[in-house]
Image 1 (cartoon, rainbow, N blue to C red):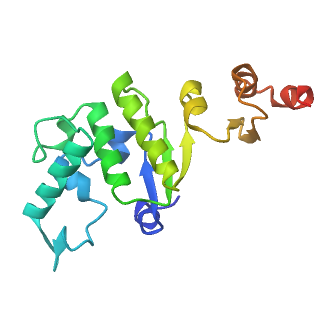
Image 2: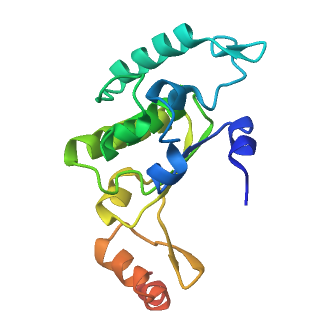
Image 3: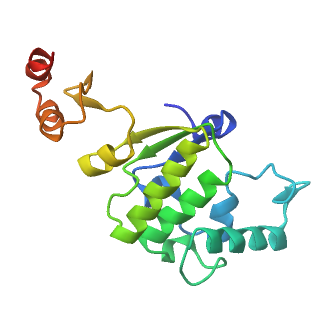
Length: 184
């Protein structure tokens, strides 16, 4: 298991599957959650002391830029809806301009508007040169965002030979050998 701090230092942005458990610290404020991965930045902390005014201003800018809605940046993050928690996580990840983004089920449980925003931000990051590893059970999401598609079934990784929905569905059901045999 790779620790989050090692991933942050390696320039890897993480959009976790369970945003409530692994994406935020619910008792901390929205603002604190937005800077939690930047505690070594001088605008966040100096000589071990948090720069609260700077953190608040930074969080308000991110909340506006990413349309994070809720009771305000001073409120506990647990009070945000799932979609707004996801937007908070996106703001935190994308403002770092990571070279690699691990996006695990990034739109699960989100309304169409929030899901579209997540997809748009991932595509923007990819266009800027970030590598995006998308892990998703949503075939529409995979087909809309992925350049290459791999399927894991029973612990085995198979590259999809095409973007054909039926073929990928069969691979997901464990029929990868049949698909490979039928592909020229």
